[in-house]
Image (cartoon, helix red, strand yellow):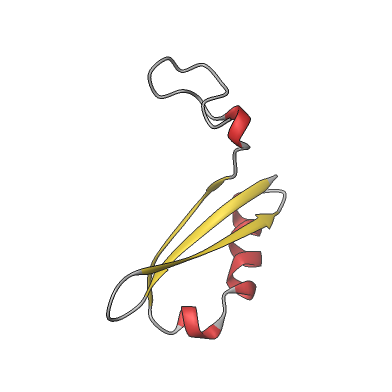
Length: 71
């Protein structure tokens, strides 16, 4: 399963570092992501989000709920 990890970092203004991680489950994805975070990002990171990565053509349209909104 593919996961997307977004990490907010920065002291003057917020920046975002994004990782794509392939793992069998969420716990494994967190472990893999933790090993791949650059030290300059980890130094001042204050928030991380992880979620299953969804291909653009599979995202639902916010208005109708039908797939294909991101294409």
